[in-house]
Image (cartoon, rainbow over all chains, first blue to last red; front, side, top):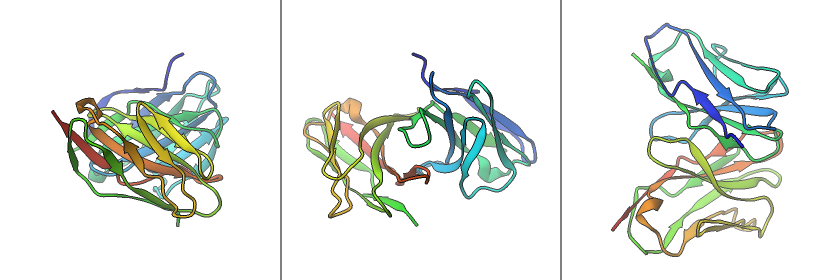
Length: 112
Length: 111
């Protein structure tokens, strides 16, 4: 059984650019959640997708947007990148929104 | 709002020492509680969980008991190894709210 995978592993962007991060959920999981983990902090919830619909959103501005595809993989898009967006972005999948979340290895984004 | 508070690190122990990492939570209702571990340069791995009061989660020698009366979920291990060096996160989930994490506790085990 394949676990949660994310791509790319590392990314460097400049301020004002846009970025797309990708996540493949674990087999059989229909729910994907995205988190931002700043250095030395715990992960902060960005949003969750369940069966291709947004199912909750944290305290992040609209320039953070997402998508879930029919195969339940997901994308996180960030527009107009800011220096403070530099972080580890984690994707987690679960059988449904109430079940245990399993995390991918993360994408480390550096904004210069 | 709902929150999780962990003891501040870093925690440095000698190999075979006893480990306790404190975690308390605030919550409405009856949350599920989790410990996740993050090894250097990696994502989060689920270590153990408990879904109701008095449940004990255990895995790889680690244990934590869901204490509703003290709103705590302390992580313990009787004898730590160098390979246990990592950052440990306590988290809660309740109803339709997302996972809420503590700030993490860095553990360093020296031989």
